[in-house]
Image (cartoon, rainbow, N blue to C red; front, side, top):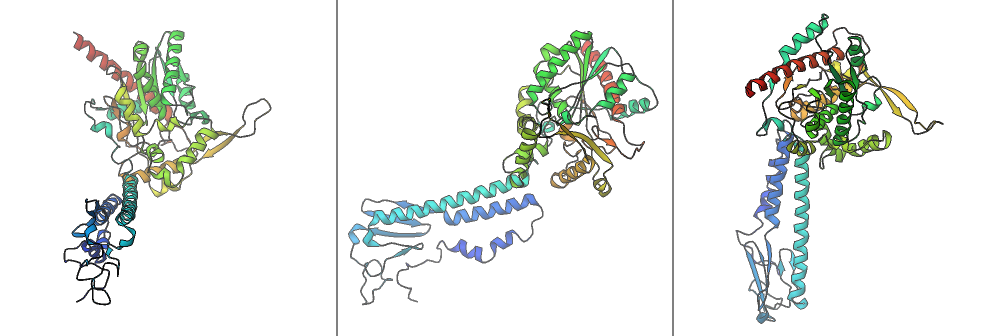
Length: 491
């Protein structure tokens, strides 16, 4: 059959085969059954690769006698010696002769006008080819962005447990439960020869009840207990410096060594202080207990701040910047220091000393509908207002926040997206410090449990002061055992 004028002959192996495959239903087959969000990104990547193969095989050559354009199996050559001559018997003129001036030849949808000259036609084709390549690059970038969004922090959670050279942990849950039961029956063993320093976590400056019940309970037992008054919304390294100064002031003032207990980011700050300044503090510190601390990082912080994550799509990152920087006058680096990237960078350079006794404690939040619907567990906070008082201080607005329900919702999100157990903000695996004695209670406690108070007065609820006392008592025993082990090695 005779072809239309202006169209070169197409072979059976021409480059339109991929387009026929797409139209015949190859792409619909890629998306008919996607078992999970992770595989969805893989299907999109396959589609991108297919489109790339379809459009990326353009090349331009410049022979000495003219120019040529190649597209996969097709090759149409225009020579300077053929101007005015017949190009192909498949392009007849209306008079029956074969003239190149009657109908400009077509190549891949681009009209080659011989009157414009080879250089102009080649320039137009190169511009078209570059535009196509730019479009493909943008499409591939979107696919990669979608893949990162779908994967999120899945590859980072529990990275400390997979890292080579990290010491193993020891399970101390059984002994902890025994100590806690003794405390509930009035048996207390914490020595008064130690000063206990409690380090609160993020936003603690606006929680008036943070660690108050624990300090009160310790004081009733005749124990010296302090709450570190640090700027909780400051960076980890800044708070580490302040904690070092706290420890030195306590030691020189009381001539007693210090035992630290940090909750959430407070545990990370305390661990950083001992990692960075151990040469100055090793004779002044007894041990460290971390409770619900994102020692390896937090998926919530990473998903909010990491590029291509959820924070980019629902403006959570901008909201956190306003809350931390504008409302409570903090430093955004306080949240950034809890991301996996920052924690990996810090722990690669600064690890806890092996001779330091460490206890790490993590919990799992309940995610049942009853927990999500309840407002019985609330946190009391004081938020600054914008209008200053006459004395120059910012007035504070007391608020009550249903943190129990919020933590349950976050824990359910992490369970659905990553299949990880968490307290709502920190996964169980990221809270385990390498080389530490780990406490893994079965009781459902969310991340804010140590901060809020119970409105229903349920006696079965765990008491924060008793748990802190049990953890510190366990830490004393771990320290005694570790000192005995080091003494045996020295002998």
